[in-house]
Length: 333
Image (cartoon, rainbow, N blue to C red):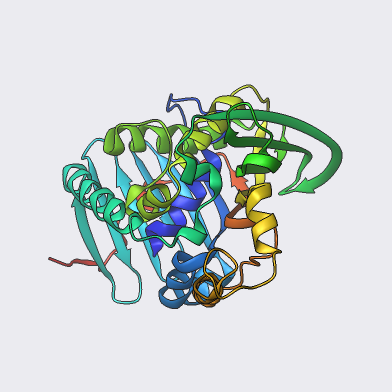
């Protein structure tokens, strides 16, 4: 689960401007939440405990070739020069070592597994845009809201970046599709925080071979179920590079939009003859709703994923101790 929330932080951060040059040390405190709807969300809530419901507050530090992310019960240290990840169990005072190469093999296994599971995904959870197999087009929009607020001692302004995916030549309300929205509170550029972004980009490129900061060990199922997600995130990252400033609070949502035809079918009177409004459709919808944790099948737009990252404090320095395995910890083989 600790990698699940580290993934959420990286996903939101790496959608913005990233400077892949490590120059200085930094330490920050952040609070991260990651909420999935539907069946995946049910599993996360079941096994994630309070962390899945309330989020995780962590201290993140970068010094030299190491980054640490430590919360109350767990932590992780990434060493770029060693090409190793140290997962810490603070309660048991143990750590487990995983090499980048081992992670790459695990990632491929997760991708293959997720692709197989995606084939069994209920049809009612797919949008018409996915079912049609037709070419999708992407639209991006950047909106300055004019709102300001103080975060971690910095004056920030709100910018909302939206990426839409829908069938080419049609409006999203007609064809159905997806929205990826990043609501950001931007402060003037903070060079220290760029160090964390730069480090995480280097790490993801070294392990996953791609610039997009998504950990497939946690996100493979989501991307397999919604193939458009990764392409939209890449579009968002590209658009985010045009923005000036450093995000201190981000809320990212991934929504599915039903087509006009789907909405018309869902509002039709129930019938035992089959189809979307028939008995099988009603049972499937009931099961999907029960497993899905509350998505409203009567709504045209439903949220699949919500992730937030809030910077609580920023310190432009870090010590060797901040990124070291705590004294007294033993390696778990």
